[in-house]
Image 1 (cartoon, one colour):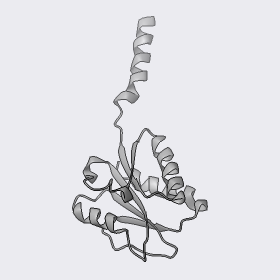
Image 2 (tube, rainbow, N blue to C red):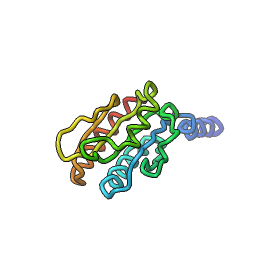
Image 3 (tube, one colour):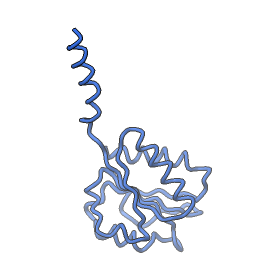
Image 4 (cartoon, rainbow, N blue to C red):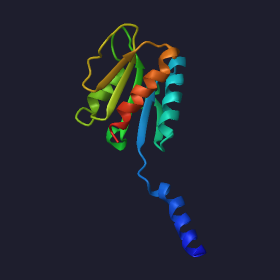
Length: 145
C-alpha cells in the first residue's frame, strides 16, 4: 500500500513537468510606464507557468526575431507624431504573413488606431490604468494558446 501511495505521489508531482508550457515574447522600450506595464504583464503570465522573454526594440533586439518561435508576441511602443515607431513597422513588414500572433500596444493620448494589420491596443501612459490594461492584454495573449 505504501508503494502504491509513493507511486501515486510521484506521478502527481511530475505532472507539471510534462504540462505544455507557453512562450511569450514581450517587446518594450525603456520608459517608466512601459517598465511597470511589462512587469505587471510578466507577473500575470508567469502565474500559469508561461515562459516570458523580454527584449527592447529600441536596442535593435527585434531584428531577426521570428514570431513563429513564440505562442504570442506583445509589442509596446510610444506613438511618435501619430505613428508606430519605424523599427517596429520595419519588423512588422519583415514578418508579414507570419504575424498572426502579434499584439501591438501603442501609447497615445487620444483615441488612435495604428495603420497595422496586427491586433492593436492604444492607451494613455497612465500607471493608474495598468491593472485593467494587463487584464485585457493577458486575455488577448492567452487566446493564442
